[in-house]
Length: 90
Image (cartoon, rainbow, N blue to C red):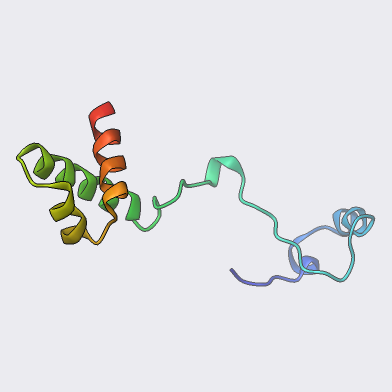
């Protein structure tokens, strides 16, 4: 995230209005809802985890033990149980 001087991009009237609330500090202005991406969408992490969870569930259905899955994927047994439960709901 880069720093931009407000004077370079905002009209003076808007700067004066903002100065009624804050001055001389950096503030973060979030993206509008239309530009928002959910966690993991931008770098495809969410899709990779979804695929991993499907694989875990399929292996579990084929008889692989929770303990074995936990060791194979470096996830706690509780985490494996959560993944299995969520996949069953789908």
